[in-house]
Length: 223
Length: 265
Image 1 (cartoon, rainbow over the protein chains, first blue to last red):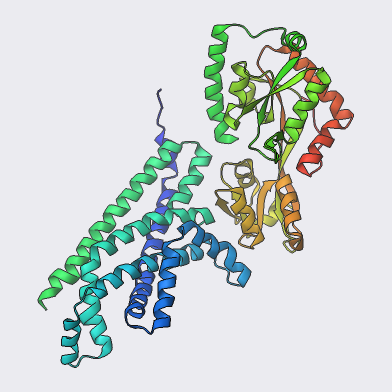
Image 2 (cartoon, rainbow over the protein chains, first blue to last red):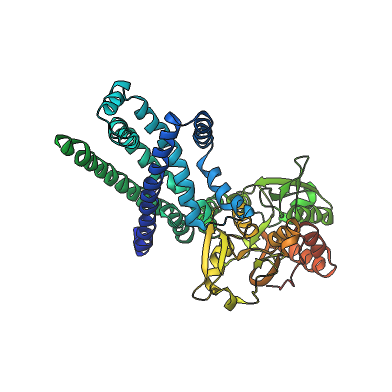
């Protein structure tokens, strides 16, 4: 068994793969920002909201965490147009990733929020902080610090999971790789390059998050 | 067909080399078939409507029906040799089958490893869209979103005729491509003609039709190189059944579209 690697054909199309990788990064970061906002609001409602709202948030989290991302994607892309909401491929991909990441992050942030001892919140009240100040400064900030590694891991999973949006014709890295593979027939070469690109993005993200942690929680602690 | 073709060509060449080394192909295959009263024909049952399994798990489809008709006209028993797409040619070269009748498109690459009969069927790639989409030729594709499935004949052929400004998007499966058309996520799709006919039946309200034909690929019956006598008989059979309408009837029954005029090689 010998296989002759021919990377030349793939490198000719390298800029297309870079465009795909860039869309992957964009999708991941937008989904991170919006998903985190969803998670913070949901975690707040889940822990302090009235009972029906808590149940609603719980239903959302459980529904998303117990169904495949691909199915959620198909529902948004293929089923919602029937209800009058038409998102293009990239829009549907982003919506699915936000909803998906939001549910996982809600659980992670909720765990952090519930780990904050009651005494700390009482201390905030004693200082006459407003409800919002208490939630943001006394609860959320240390909570996010506590669950930071879990959030960062979940984010890398989100970035890697974004590969399934190729199924609805969003042109991210996996979609471009699939197309190149089926037109150049160089499956090994294309996917080896794609794998290395994903690896590089994941490693860069981990580095970014380590730096962010230091910036926000370590360096900022003295103030 | 594309990637498979090259892979096949390589695999087939290797096996063919082996076959040559172990012994010359039987020059009197037709005699042997008639004497043994049995012909072995490939059956690919994962490519509807050419070959599929029916409710009772029995092979059916236009190519299977063609195989049955050939056995009947030879007056011999039919043995179906089940194959997958990539095994169609190796099954011939390794003498597991006498004929390959599995929608094998006639290409010059494949002709290096097997001998083809005159075409007995055709597969047209068309652009299909709903009634309110205005497309009558390649030029109208500009500015429209056209969906198609990866690793198919349409993926190779449609970009060649699409004018600049055509937005071609790719899906991984036929089901997703068709769903994209039904839900309006794309304006039109490139697909085999029979798929468009089938889709039109499932969504009558949209008035889906084939807007124009992009390319027609012809497929033929293949024999192992050297089986001159068998190939000659098969060509005669194709000629006769083309003119008496049997081929067209089999094709239309199973695919739901009209068989185009079949040229001869």
